[in-house]
Image (tube, rainbow, N blue to C red; front, side):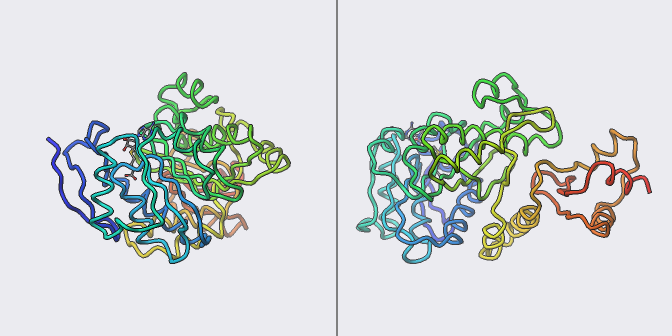
Length: 347
Ligand SMILES: C[S@@+](CC[C@H](N)C(=O)[O-])C[C@H]1O[C@@H](n2cnc3c(N)ncnc32)[C@H](O)[C@@H]1O
């Protein structure tokens, strides 16, 4: 049985439904495991430092994300924040939570109870839209792509990772218009397939949605896109669609803007997050699609595995770039070719 408890997440005090099993059956959805998703959104908006932005939280649940934005984004960033959920129960809890945080009278806040697509389509547009659904973001991509402003940020979460990572290839073809591959690097190919899908929706409206920060964690994928407006941006973007590792088509361009990844890692004060963000900062500097999963690489070629540290030193000594990858603890991202890596492992 779910019960209401009071918690603190970041700088927000919240009344939320708590249950042993977190599922969409909760009367109002709140998942403590998604704290990292919200932490990174706050770090990213603080790192970008844009002023006077209009924010959309179309699927707000308990309101935790918006309340944290208001309390944790630097002064001057938020002009207005629109909090929406189609559930009356969620809206009641959002109002209670705003009051609990003494934000009940904040003039910057607008609350609505609409379907997310209607909410987006009835708006004049936003500088930041956060699509945080149960499962696939597909139903909301069209209205989000239409309503994201020039140079605005579209944040997309997908929790249906099994389709994208190849457990259900037919579902991936139907929903994401690409062939997935279930192997050691499936989280990266999966996120690249999702990125291209979002980009194709934006392309229809002459919007190039370029990833500036992306990651996959245990049960979800998350991408922040910047919206560049104009045909030439879209044409350039689409040149970076292609196949890789017998999967695709997918986005083969950068997953991160390196300057932004560095800023996010620097702004972060949470010890638990610092290793993760440090790894991403490292891999953001290497503009290569895919990574070497060292166990799989050695097994396939009947090579003896060496210590990762030694392999990385050898790669650096030969003048190539190398980093860990957040996608796998056994992975390294590097611009070294397969043959050269094989030489190192054969030595
Ligand atoms: C995954 S939860 C969102 C969690 C929230 N963003 C957070 O950070 O805690 C999804 C929310 O979307 C709402 N929802 C689902 N479908 C919707 C739709 N079509 N329009 C508006 N809200 C919707 C649900 O009521 C639920 O509160």
